[in-house]
Length: 124
Image 1 (cartoon, helix red, strand yellow):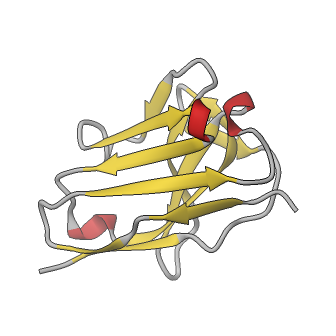
Image 2 (spheres, helix red, strand yellow):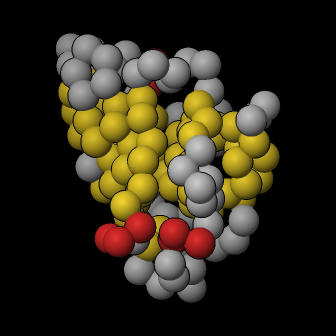
């Protein structure tokens, strides 16, 4: 079953930083755009950022200038550096092969099932 594994979440104070990692073990992630999503209880999962196969990056307005998505094809990894974290960034974060879109950031998920995600909690 195609699935990505997220890690790197945790509890951090407002203004702090975290780096999330997304590992693909059953396919080569460098062949696909990869998106980061987040979900809070009671709300729909939100596409937050996306990186295409040529390295183009896309972000929702709420994270622009604070978060950076990157990929290391040699390691089959995608990263999500989150700086200047705010309480409203608290969510479970997921990654998935996605369709990047310059207007909506992520227009859809390509394939595979959702992983377990990684919890990010921003609180003092």
